[in-house]
Length: 165
Image (cartoon, rainbow, N blue to C red):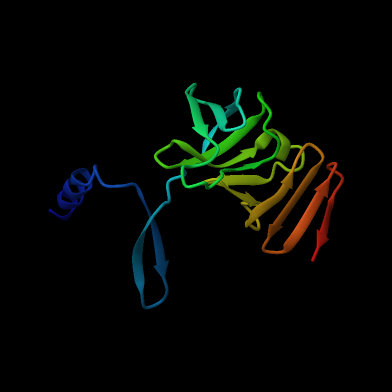
């Protein structure tokens, strides 16, 4: 009877959000905590042609996403790196998908590091061993300057890191 109930319960919950179970246990306590994973809203693709007020991304799925660089309230979207057609970018949008929130030139970023992860438009360096969510201060073909948990760091011409405090 118990097994049938578990099977029936599992099939009745098929329309609920995907959750990851985390089990905590010690000698006296064993509990399961449901943690809802945050969905990544980042779009990936290649930059198309764009103008002074627009940004175009051709996504990995083949969709063309054309957004404005600033919203009606005057808030500008952030573009880290040079806006180069043909370069690989990731981006997030706001205002119902009409306005650029944040874009990162991945072609330029990967000239400096490949040890990163993007989550909802945020850059996380060393995601496996020692994750550090950083803010990019400058990114181009020769320079990568960022501020993170360990302070400001500068990477120039792919020849090593110099930490500035």
